[in-house]
Structure formats: C-alpha cells, structure tokens
Image (cartoon, rainbow, N blue to C red; front, side, top):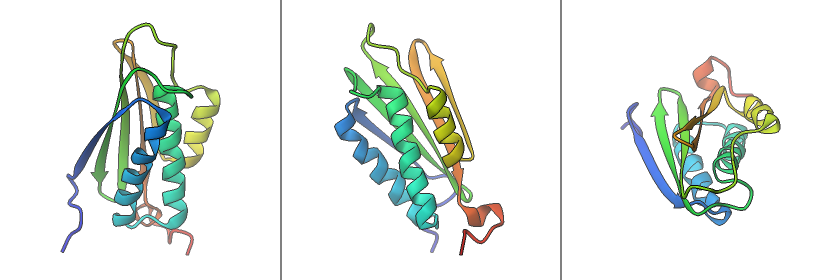
Length: 136
C-alpha cells in the first residue's frame, strides 16, 4: 500500500499569528515522516517552516491569514506560504539571515511579492531520494 501518492497536496489556512505556527510545523512533520525523512531532516524541515512562517507573518503576527500549501513530490516535499493581510501593515519578507538559514536547511527556496503580499516557498528532498544513505 502506498501511503502518499506523488500528487498529494495539503492546504492549511491559519490566522497569521505566531501562536498558530505550531500547526504548520506539525503538518510538515507528519507528511515528512510518512515520506521517509530521517529524524534530522524532519528537524530541518520544522526549522524551515518556522522561518517561512516568520518571513510571511513577521515576528509578532499580522491581521489576516497565512495559507500554507504542502505538495508531496517524489522523494520530497515542497511548501509554499502566502500571506493574505489587510493593507498597511509592516513590511515582511525573508532577510539575509533568513535566506542563509533556509539555504542550510532545504534544497531550494525563494521569496517573492505578489500584489503586495509575501510569498515564500521551499523544497526539501529526503536524503534517500538524493542517492545518499541519509546519514545512517
């Protein structure tokens, strides 16, 4: 039995407050563990989700919603976070440190602005999908 076909997608909408980021991490962790990610890879993914959410909502949150889209790919997971906020809030986005953190944790990442709203995404492949033994 295949637990997750290559086309599985999960979308999660949350109030854009830091107290809800835990739900984003739990969703990513559950998907990654079912995909065969190692413990270290799951921890990297959890940190990457924190960084993604922080980039979209800022350190203290915003009025509005963050929508996270998790796309299960062969041997990996792609996560996109998109903000839907009231106009006039403080600017948010991925700074130099955020780029460095995501570069160390995931295989690819990017941030863009779409109609004044931040969009951040990353892709992480399981080490076994990259042809390594996952550190074992």
